[in-house]
Image: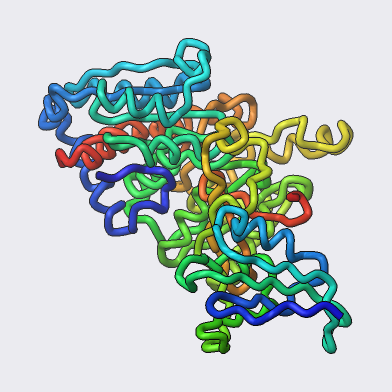
Length: 145
Length: 303
């Protein structure tokens, strides 16, 4: 069994769906941060059988976690200070997400102007519907990658 | 500084003020003949649209202003690969207000984000065409006296018709309006519209034959049923005549019903209807100029 030590300050993202941790690593742009990151894949989980865990040692104000709620509600976010869990963050859907998902509407201006950011806003919090800021096309995971 | 991207950008109170102004322009054109003197409208049309562009140009000219612009992408710097963001930065140096039509959805919003002058969306693909909706609303308000308390029939292609969806979304903000959707099964109004009407508890009915509901209507908004929308020729041939308005069908209508159409008309309204006092579609084009005049004055803060 693999053991990864405690972190002093930062986040432990637990209960990530097995195999999804690298995707989160990219969305959170952890490659751009100069900090210690542990990616634990296929850890044993009592609830799910297996899960991924991300441990990020950084200033807790450095990371924007809004995107996590969009990707997966069930992730547990533990905020660590002085080696202890000081908060378990509730994930709420962000009102806007930028450059996380792409608009796949071929009629959208973002399809021809490459430098434009792909911005989606939360159009319906109950049905969890996001729409492209420019063409208002509904985001559909099936049509996107 | 404000832009116009969608007809819902203005509250109903703001629309009332806009339509009051348009009404005053209609009745006192001389008062506004020099209102935009020294101002320049840029019409940036990345795809041809003669009526909308001329309507904007007429509106600015009647206000005493001047117009510059281009009427298709080939004659603009877009053909050299310039982005909409860069183009509007340049246009902001040349003009005081811009009307933009673009085949890509959201292009005018991209322009508005970078612009130093008000941008009017003059149509972005199948997405929005707010000045058409403002034209429709002003026509109804001017000829019916108010925006509310009527039964409106929307007839033809209700599935793909951008003007129809936009008009419904704008009308639901007013009181006591009943919608009758008249279309073939293939071209029914999308679910998201009927879901929205149910949610707001607004009365609507979907029917196939225009004749069946004609006597109930206070307004009839016609659109074209295009052959290419059908899966097979047989269905098209069977149904197309249902959606052609002629004198016989109009004889079933109320004396004061009004027929509207965003134009251009092809054959969905027979020319024999043109002389009927209920045919309001050419007057509608006239209101399109008044509402654009009022809009230019409002966005330039000259009203």
